[in-house]
Image (tube, rainbow, N blue to C red):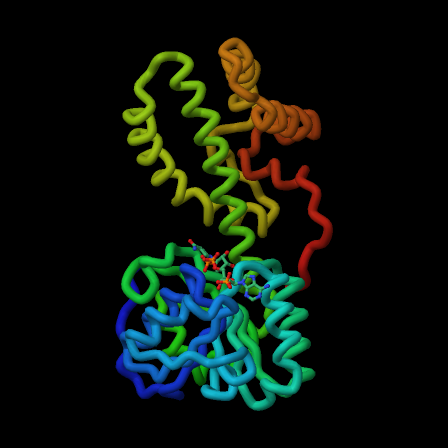
Amino acid sequence: MTATTDTSPRATDAVTVLGLGAMGSAIAAAFVERGYRTTVWNRTSSKTAPLVAAGATAAANPADAVAASPITVICLLDTAAVDAVLDSLVGAVAGKVIVDLTSGGPDHARAVARWAEDQGAEHLDGKIMSDPPDIGSGPVTLPVSGSRRAFEAHEQLLRELGTVTYHGEDAGAAAVEFMAQVAACYELLIGFLHTVALVRAEGADTVGFAERLAETVGQLAGLLPTMAHAVETGTYPPDLGPLDVQAALMPDLIAHRDAIGVESVRMREVRELMDRRIADGHGDEGFSGLFELLAVAATPER
Ligand code: FVH
């Protein structure tokens, strides 16, 4: 999805950006281009130069930078860097809105929210699922959560960066979405790479295979909400066919991998789950029923 230009009135014309790595610089540049009075700070001060040349103002330290605007966007390498910068902002953020776009987990986002509340500031956590060149003009997905009041006041500013989805007042919710999206992509892509190894070992055309697989994955996309619905209702129709039939292929699938030296640990896990589910009397149900065997620490209250 491409970012759209919102023409509604702005809550503020001034914004501060802390952190000018590849992503922070792209964020600051997008604000400058859209006419925001943009104040920037970076630990290595030389990185402010291109932005100052474009119209931003460089601050000497994080506290001066935060003082310059009602809202501050933080985008640093990791949560440790965020903690280091926040330590230098104790007593300097009261009445401000802090938006942390640094990648990290939900516990850290909630801890930053508590810190902000103690400091008299409002807090939003956001996670960027895109590359720096796309910020402001390309397919940028930006889940955000935390203070509803701050979100509603500054939604337009965040939409300057990309497509924003608000996930509620739990500061950790955006990180949950981000972690789940990233993990699902990694699981899919490592499976894809192992399969490319298999196709290659058999001497087949890997690029042609990948193009055809892309179509298959596109068809699978429609199955995901159906499977999530099955999980929520505890009713597992035979989505990919009955487990009895699916499981019959697994020995051949694993043997093929073993024969050509391609890793088969995940396929063995799938086979074991299928076998257990069938042994429990669910052989007529679908793949989604394997969910019942996955360790789930807690079922959330709704
Ligand atoms: N770049 C990307 O493709 C991705 C795409 C998806 C999301 N991310 C996340 O964005 C965060 C920032 O990533 P980045 O690409 O801007 O990272 P760098 O270019 O390496 O810049 C890192 C900045 O963090 C500063 N920094 C690091 N440690 C500290 C510290 N202890 N105190 C203060 N600042 C610190 C660093 O400063 P300097 O080295 O220039 O002095 C940079 O400004 C990240 O969470 C990605 O996961 C990007």
